[in-house]
Amino acid sequence: MLSYMVFLLSLFLFCFLNLWWELMCYLLFLILFLFSSISFFDYFCMLSYEWGVDYISADLLILGVWIKMLMFMSSMGVNWFKTSSVLFSFLILCLLMVLLFVFCSYNLFLFYFFFESSLIPTMFLIVGWGYQPERLTSILYLLIYTLVGSLPLLLIIFWINFIHCSGFMFFTFSGGFSLVVYYGLILAFLISIPLFGFHLWLLSAHLEAPVSGSMILAGVLLKLGGYGLMRMFGLVGFISSSVLLPWFLVGIVGGWLVGCFCLMQVDMKLLIAYSSVAHMGYVVSGIMSFSQWGFTGSLVMMIGHGLCSSGLFCLSNISYGRLGSRSLLLNRGVLSLFPSLSMFWFLFCSSNMASPPSLNLIGEVFLGMGIVSWSFLSVPLLMMGCFLGGAYSLYLFSSSQHGKFYSGVKSFSSVSSCEFMLLILHWLPLNLLILIELYYL
Image 1 (cartoon, rainbow, N blue to C red):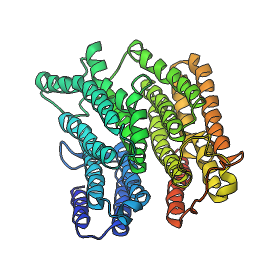
Image 2 (image 1 turned 180 degrees about the vertical axis):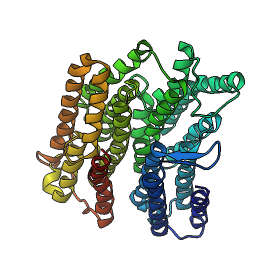
Image 3 (image 1 turned 180 degrees about the horizontal axis):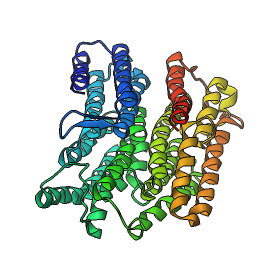
């Protein structure tokens, strides 16, 4: 494990040697295969008492490295136009290192420190390469929500270290905690995921972030919340169903409420951001079900959603670069302008509604089994959520691809081979990883 960290640190040398994107992509491919060896052969690898990898963190690490590689591909314009490309690549590599430490940390304080440190490069990416002057306001929302929500978590971590003399993440406290401690442990992660009601910072950040910022937000940073919830519930042991019930209901009900909001959107990027909130609501409900089906479905859903939502943000950015608008009122008739791009719109929208053979299908099946095993009364809400998920995915596809294209579009460029490769590298793992999941079943 230490050799992987040292190898990853060596990437910073190439950041300043003017050996740009191609070499970094090759190196990230190599690191991806190294982490794959951990995931498939060593399901629990301890580097020390405070560092290690298990199958949950290894899967999310692989997702993080893959998304970082695709971020470099989606941001080729930064290198071509030399707009602070050294700083841009440095921030991406710093964020990759922080995520590595988050997923490999078994110490509560180190986990908290690196969890909050992921905000710093993200804020610089939004401020430095965002599109609108309102990006400073989105940064303010991000800071207020995350820092205020994580303060109780920090205090409880100090209390655990003081009372129990242990900060080990896998040490289960059999004596139990009070209700205040339960909520303090999970509040920061419910905001980070984000749960419905805490999601306003995410919408603002997505609207103002560049495409690489939206990719890392939807692809990896939201998964930190789900990962933290899984780790915290392993720490506290058994939890009464009455404690979990409010968050369980907010996750499901909030999911289909957000689905209704998606059907009223005319901004492509905002619609995709809302769909992320809906999917993460079901992930929270699956974790709150406190069952093996729910935990497995949440992990599979996080990986599938990370690939699908990142691909959708790339598609919206490609359309925005050609047509100059994210509005569905202006992005009509793309099928007649870019037929090959419309094929990818269909593939990703169908994957977003959990059609086979996407990874989201397995995730939703597992989540449904876990949620229904916790409460059979949740079946109508799940049915409504699945229906709305298909409805807003079809709405996004039909509104953007069909109809007469906007007559104000005077000129546009064709889709490059690099952009096609970027979309293919999103879609292939999203639909081929289902074979691995079925093998391990």
